[in-house]
Image (cartoon, rainbow, N blue to C red; front, top):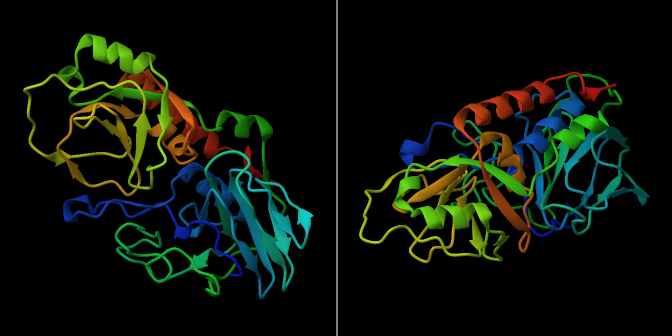
Length: 308
């Protein structure tokens, strides 16, 4: 590791099932990009990779490797030559991979054939940044860190993603949501305003939550709720009326009313939102949410992803 970038961490698909212990899943903020990057290399989809946020790092490979970059365009070069996203490629011994500031979304993934080898914590290689658990040395990467790569399971094959499939999986700025458990705590006028409004992602956003700036939608006064479990993508509204989208390092319980919940098919779009990005919400029913998720999964698992 020559330069770590702004925030580079080891991530897989997270550690599910530990919410009752107060441990949120963490994992890749854009799980779709991680999964596709791994498929391009013949890795299992949950193989650990590097997640870079807003500004990429500089990496020198002591040995030959096979890599794929996925997610947002960080203007990557290999030994001074521009390389593209969404395809597998070989890195020679001593090769230097350099990434700069983002040219599109928030996160880029460096996937390596064989994966990044770190000691699992609660069954996952993912770094939980806010609590300092998991990943490499339980923290984001620093200059001079030496990372091990796992053994490759197959010889190099050139793989890429179908352009139309990639377009279908592109991150959205109109996020589809279902009604939250306290949806009826908000007046009809507040609900209309919420779905009609354009919100801006605040600078204070992080992997725990995306704070939004825009029209205030406070819940009806005088109602109180008992703290309850919360889910990824829940849109909770504190007393200020400014919504917060709970993200991959969310608290596992919360006492604020939740007006809506981002659907699973759009979770990966949250991972590519940058500060000052503008978003809107579109309400769908549960049947539509399930249908959209099934459609996305069929596409990811099809031969349009990772074909020679």
